[in-house]
View (cartoon, protein in one colour):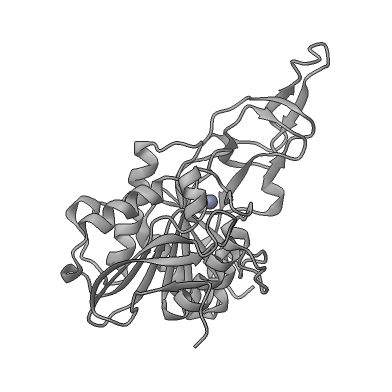
Length: 340
Ligand SMILES: [Zn+2]
């Protein structure tokens, strides 16, 4: 049998607990046969669904990394029904550097799930997830947030696709997670993101944008942790602890391309409203000032539509083309579930 550029000692079909690594070959000048050991934990007990929990796809997004690290330390395999695969730092080089992309190859793990996998360390991780892990899974939960450059009002997320029953199943899982905002996008993702690989494997893709700005806030952490515990309960994998039982008010929302807005020129973005605000189309989102040429008139940035300002840029200095944020608008449940 030939040697693989990414291998593991974990036996995915064995009952019990295995704490191991996905060993990613990384051959460089100082270490010809070196590996990047990506931590992976398997918890399997009896029959039940398989859930992949992944954080650190982007290394500068910390809520999921913290939550899954604690989960690995505290979860007793005897308490679960089914199979949990936990990757607390999926793109380990990026996670250790605290950066969105990998310092090894500038690879963005969540843009490596296209139909072709280039020969790079980050793409190899993606390929392993897509071709080895996802075929075993029923549900894939992928932690995200705005990272260093964006800040989100914490929300849970789902791709909704498939036949009537499948769409309903996916939406029910998202709604059971009961984040204050449930963000849905309809149809399989078009880009090379992890949700695309989930779709190819007929695996439900759930995620969330739990804060950002390069830091962890208590609020974002709590929304994320509550979502994941409620999801495990919904799937019958783990009993719901009383702490996560009370329901909160939740809004079902979505975005179109037009709800994203961008810097029209270089400068300093001064927002005119707070993240989370209800805004009107054409209203001022802020101005871009140029301290380097202070007499240049401020460049106005307008909200492209009415909606909730769910995501904003977290870094003041901007370049033309930088995303300054996006809105979400209420999604009618019947439209989310409809065929169209
Ligand atoms: Zn992310």
